[in-house]
Image (cartoon, rainbow, N blue to C red; front, side, top):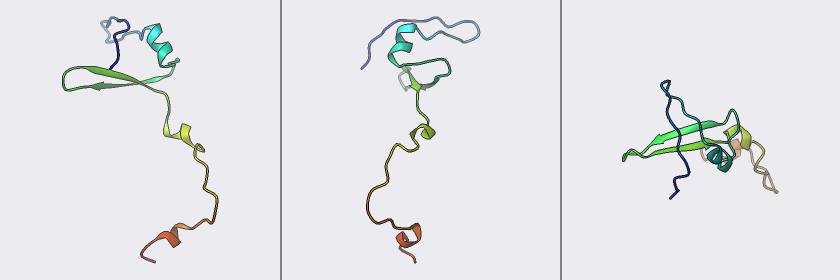
Length: 77
């Protein structure tokens, strides 16, 4: 899977600093949200949440050809 890159220390307030090399690898900037997952064996996976569903708006192009309304798609009409 991955390799151990570096370590950080947990403060008395439960805070830690994400090491600079890790931030660079995931392109994390101030405001980047982190998603924490704890696996059954105790392994913790931290993922940088870099995209929201709203960031994907306009990503797909409408197919060419005849357009069909939702009403015409309904099998109950």
